[in-house]
Length: 493
Figure 1 (cartoon, one colour):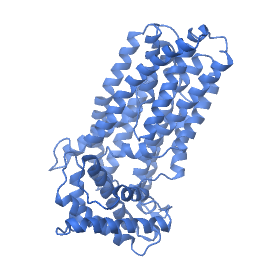
Figure 2 (cartoon, helix red, strand yellow):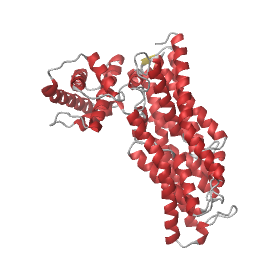
Figure 3 (spheres, helix red, strand yellow):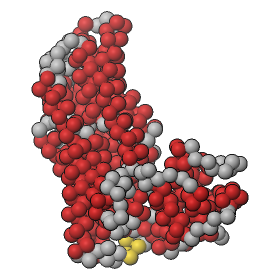
Figure 4 (cartoon, helix red, strand yellow):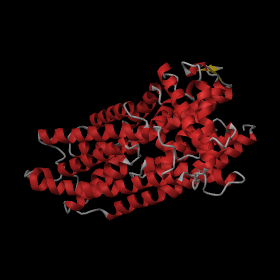
């Protein structure tokens, strides 16, 4: 069987369909689990009918996902163990993908059933960490815990921790500011269930719902895109290991940049020569948590930059490379790019006189790409999911966080803060939780308005927030171990 120009076995084709189906199912569940937060305010303030609200929100999610940059997608992938990313087509790679997706879907469905606005981002990151921990435990010669990119996990965890606190404080302050500047008493009363709000208020609430939905699509939609790309690279390397849409100028530019990088490194580290396999092992070790740079690290960058230059010599397009060579080229690009990124953050001593940032930018053009059909498939899954199953979460946000129902000003304040926070996180490539930001924003407006908070609901929200990580780490680790053993027993390596 041939798919996208790559010959695949029937079993591999089945695995491909199942894995992509699970990735799209995750985004579908994400849609009705997370995006329900975006429509809660317009529904409870009677600004839009429920059907109109969820259809509009689904459309905005779709648009946001379609125009997303991909930065969040590859930020999530950076949490995964390097050896699993490089060997995604192996039994361990498949076990990783299935474990992450199944554990994330199960926890999302469970929290949705009980009407708890838990975070899909939090869920997926917990599953990824569980896979990394299980991988380091199962592989001989590895220290427990080295399978997790702790530096990236800390960065992502900080964004997930800070964003709800910011949402609570900023939404409360915004409501208090509005009270001082906008003297319309009806803004601050619980919305009447049988009356439309004034036109300008209704327009503001629809605008904020639109903004949150679009921002959610552009941020959360990328998580599924990143996972789909991992699957495609593993099973169809000939088509997806390298961006085949690059033109001859891009190919020539990378060859030139690789040659200049090799020259800059050779002038300083040329006395130490490493074979390609040794260079790959050296950079893989450097990218593990706790890996420190030494002369061998720079010698490895020299060796792989030279190999990249050789791969691209005399070529005007990457499609002329055989399938296995494309996979090899991708591995080299990934190792060099991520190593340069780690050296940059750690203040590594790269030779001066060469633009290493531009070199890394050229490298990423070849591997950090998302085809439009992947964006469309994920966007549709997210958008359709938004239109189904929204009611449980909407009831929690609209009725059960505060002792009074949502007012117009509270809804607008919470959504303006959520829209801004998620949009900024998207710019910086950080995953944040729409659920955490918006529900904490609603709680902040209730506190600022002295409406009172329903402590039972807040305890449940906090419990879901606290339990998500350990539960998903455990499920991810257990499913990875189970899946890996099954695949190895079936003869897959």
